[in-house]
Image 1 (cartoon, helix red, strand yellow):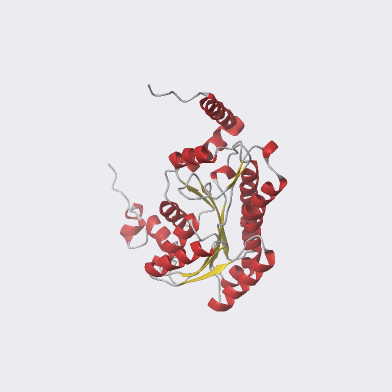
Image 2 (cartoon, helix red, strand yellow; image 1 turned 90 degrees about the horizontal axis):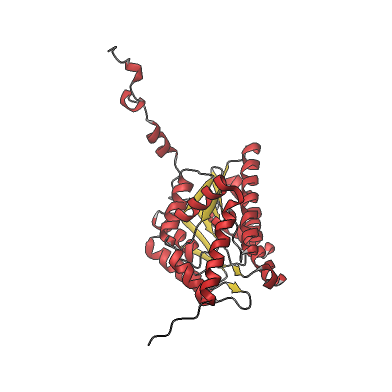
Length: 308
């Protein structure tokens, strides 16, 4: 057997840095970074804020739920960092623009922005009012656009910054009964992927990520709107059984993706499955949804068995 060349040894053994070490050193540290999180009054937004507080980030959190926002701020303080907390409606463009300017003025910079605020409406399109549809589009899509437009000048100015927009597994595949939510989350995906390319081609120092959470144990369905005739309790019961990912687990996955500067971050095994279905099966996944819906309707029509 011919002797192995000295030059064939791994870089780390020659005194250089191996690939894993180089990757680790290139990852983002959150210590001292100014981080903005919308929709931080509960769920994933709150979990992100608490995790980042524990890692020494300088936080600006917002929500329209004042009580929930106060709770988040208190938990951030317990985790080690005080947070600036503001009641801000992401659908209000002027308010978001003013909020971005105020945060930048207070901290002197903005390094990372999570456009996380979101709502949901459950109901077939034939039972959906225009107001219900517009509410979802305004918060879930325009809220992301408003946050991006308001903070992007400060992210660009700060350098080596990061914009993270939250879509959904329902931004990868569409489910019946959630047409407005699907439309908003698909729009966030397209919008974010376009902004990714624009930042890169223009040479702006802004990394851009799109996050696709699956079913996460949040209150989004509990606080969501429903079309007339929808069984609120039954829908929440099914969701609770499906949701295997905690907000803390979701936040940890997202922050790992941000550290690694991933453009696409899948959260939970169901999001991974949705991505695979979309890539491999095209629109074939729709047959699965139709089967599930048929079985659910059959169950709803079956009278409960009486105990004797």
